Length: 452
Image 1 (cartoon, rainbow, N blue to C red):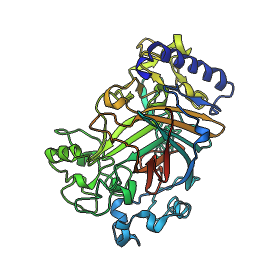
Image 2 (cartoon, rainbow, N blue to C red; image 1 turned 30 degrees about the vertical axis):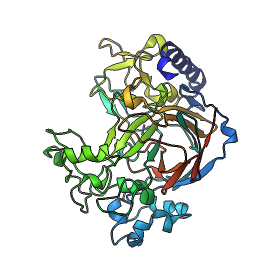
Image 3 (tube, rainbow, N blue to C red; image 1 turned 135 degrees about the vertical axis):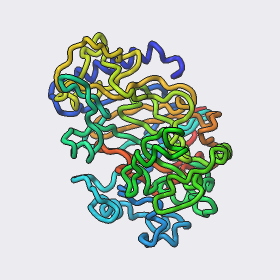
Image 4 (cartoon, one colour; image 1 turned 180 degrees about the vertical axis):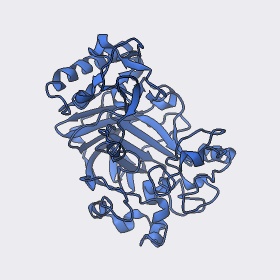
């Protein structure tokens, strides 16, 4: 259905833009009561007839894999038995402890909630798996980092809490939902470890060397590295990764001890990676997709073209003929967040160097587009209304792509969920303890058969 969306989806996008214009501009500076993206697929069942599972996600602070396996963690000796052995039912207690200033949180965010409850439904048919997620939030955040016109030039503006607020800027960062998935007892926490993603969940991807973690690696340290630096992948920071991609372990998480490329390719070919889907309220929802990634030595994007990209300088503005404006005034950003997407060939045009802008005018840093290839495997629909986000995802059970996990009826798969809420990024999300997805069988979340 999505492959033939062309003109229809363009019309839907335009109608949504004007719907939000009509409903949000009456009160400037206040978030709209409804934000919605296009619906690229239909659900061949009735969500109300599928039993929901409500799980509590907790704030993890800087509780890295290195901490969990250290003497500082009372459960380190029992880690192979799994996180749920000790912590089932303790999510609210742990979240309340970790969200405050302490050994695992050196830079707390005032007023941040310690947990969030997520309601999940799942289903499948002969071709697709479907998810519906619903969670409460005080206000939607369907905007991301922006460019601001200062009267002479465009400068980077916004960003997540607490970074942006420390710089005297209002935070602007998207809400996000992440799904992390593996096959049963497949990917070990490190070479030779009996613990796998099934037992320890997302903590095996979280290390001290990652951005915003205790041993965050500077760009200066990364640049000369043969794999990460200017002669390699040219990354600016270290993101999620698995220890099986490293030749050794250390307190920093062995960020620099990457296995040879041939070994990494071998691990991927044998399925030793995690599948990661990320619905993004600003950078993917307006085009009807989630970003499709995979985790091994880094948080990698699936092959093809992702739903968004970030030009190094402002290159696009709003198409005034479609949206009625060429930029968003700073005071109106919250009210117009449902209009904030710059979409290729729909709401965006090339930035006109002769166009007039006022001080405080804002433009998104990211351009959205229809993804292609394996990066286009996860379709999504997100809607904020009545104080809740509701997000639906659809992906083929078997995409035929080497960077995706295959799902089959009759099996239970280890899975984890994360929520990014209230303009935060990186480690400041909420996460689940390890869970299972049962496809037609029992699991923490059970996907039921729908359709013929």
